[in-house]
Length: 631
Image (cartoon, rainbow, N blue to C red; front, side, top):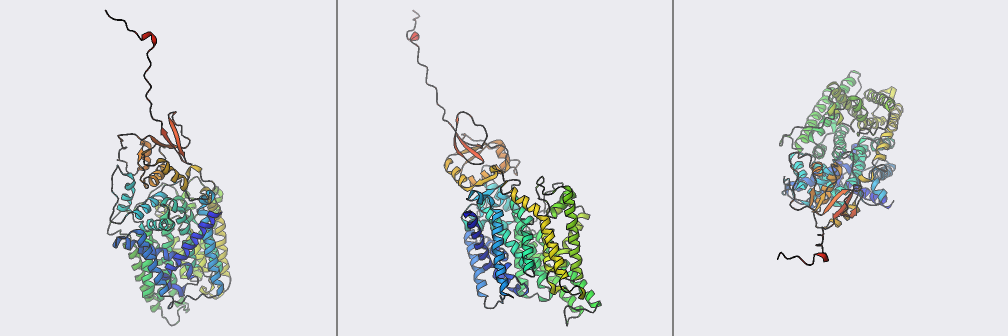
């Protein structure tokens, strides 16, 4: 219980600190957003990470120093602008609602994400199903311990530097690596044992950020927070897709701010901040994905603006008094230019053009019958961990499709451009992917369509955006809230299944405890140790990342070597001139009679080969004391 309270308090403190830093980025949008303070933590993370990387790369400062300077600079900018900003909340109740929402969101995100730490009452790390978790931790540790000028070398005799070398060469996700590295610096733990808390922080601020952009009243805030907490972003954190858990919501944030501000209210300040946030969002995963979402959502918003302007002109209805149709279309044209600027900024920020790389992603060969329940967030990404049976999946998909269609029709009837953008844009993208049979690309978009549908529904709750006389009042509001409630109920089984799978049901051998790893390091000391745990990807990677980080000399058995550096298939198994007397084996693996157990964790057993003792020479028998002379 103390660990839960401590972790929740730490997350709440980080949310507050990031909110202070993000005020400078949200200030130009404050007059357009009722719940602007909820956006500040995510915006704060984006601008701090962007500033940190700029100082780390350009000025070659240590990452910890760069992060501290970036955070302080953002906070100073926020405080300096308070006298000119209009941070007026419409009602005092909104302030209490936002504080309560932030506290509850932080507590829930912490509880479900750090369940293993809470159970063991100490820092812990859950690691199974996938292996990417420690890729982020490995690079975060490297960034914290090295300047940008100290590049990791490619050397088969130094496997610890091999993976950072690969990431520096080809990977654009340094915003995500830096996020985990900064969390590691603040909490004072390695990347491995900072990962779960970083995931809790990211889940909390991304949920709050999108609620602040799209929610229009307290009811929609509550529903949107509940829905986003139960979407696949939580699963991504547990399965090691850390970059997607940050990048997708960040791109949605930028696109949402662009649509909420509108084409007629774009100013130099809003354009500058949108470009800054788009650049930071692109660094979290890739510029291509950020550009795609900006194109889909922003482009649909502009097209909807053109269509609705023409419809309103013919019906002699104007939502922009004093503006002719040509003026409205000119504003939309200017918005298209700004959108193109944001898309270009995202692509250029990831360095794709300066370092041409083929954007590839794995094709798991899944059919659409597997893909659809997952991109609808109804089933976990991990196959075999199904939350629903076959007929339940079909029924849930049918209800989901009908709800989405109903919301899209409602958005068009109400001529709500924002809701149309986040409902019809993703729907058009999904239809295009299905018609082109792009299964691999569609499978990469788990965690996109359901959250955006929720955001569109939350936008429709605002009655001020309803223009047809016959729909004024409550019907749109209650239809949208009802659709959100049904969607959340449909997605509860998957969320509960995932929370249990990576919480109380997590295998003991996949729960790494910081205390045990520290004890293992102390037991090994300065001696070399042979890793002989077989071909176990997760275990071998964990031992490589956490032990070699602390300068433990590891010797690798052939199977363990292939598991640890399988991405280097041409590297031969190392040969050692002198074999270590210490050996790491799986906890329940048999050991020989001459090996003594030194230390045991939930995963491994450290054994030492007893020193070989030569047998003493046989004492001569009394019968042989005298020899017979040949004479």
